[in-house]
Image 1: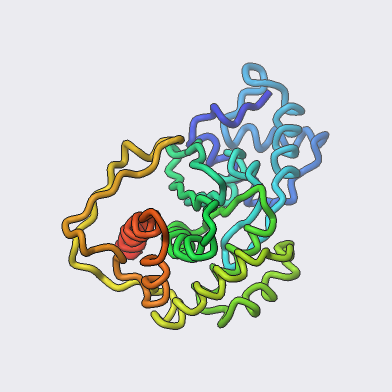
Image 2: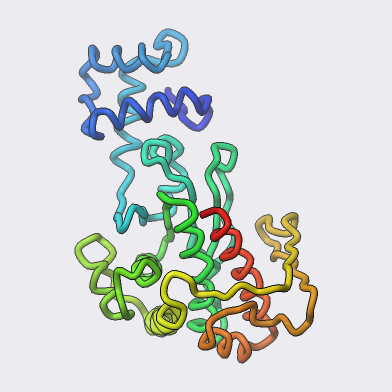
Length: 282
């Protein structure tokens, strides 16, 4: 069996290149001649690694399991897409953004893939925090294109896709952004929390002339990267206790100030850093 999870990256990239050259219309699994040619090109030893039929069957299974929606070179889909090392390589994915209730595993970081997690807020003012988090996610997508955004919740995928359209300037308000997602497979009705968050995000985009939602800030931010493993929250410090809003747009700054327990202020600092790093990467 061809276990792509353990293939050397160079060999995997060679296979991905072969698949891209076919336009992703790959030969039937029983086309032994075509698969032998592909095996010779990528250095696949059928005697030692498994039969050509096994290689062909595994490739077909991976490609058939990849169900995507695409908007502006960004892929959207279920969480299982983030597990397919072969298809991530075929699609040349540079960054994976999860939308989930907790931090997710960074499975293929050693392959050069960057990771980001938008943690769905459980608070009573969830739409305010969700709007703030969309800043960091959109910055990540811009800095790591082509990117994959994945979630087990279809309505959250629709909401994030709409946010990327607002961020890119392809939509001017929440309603038009959601409408633009129709026909792409991202047509699930968003909930009231997501809609309110998109409306706040759209206002912020207008204020900052998309996609620059945040101002530069003189204070530095330090994040303890050791605290970002699953189950832990990033530890943040700042040089000035007055630096609670981190240059967010006036609307999101006001929302940040009203969040209970300081959670929104902490996340605002985190996403300010992400935005700054993304701008530097660009």
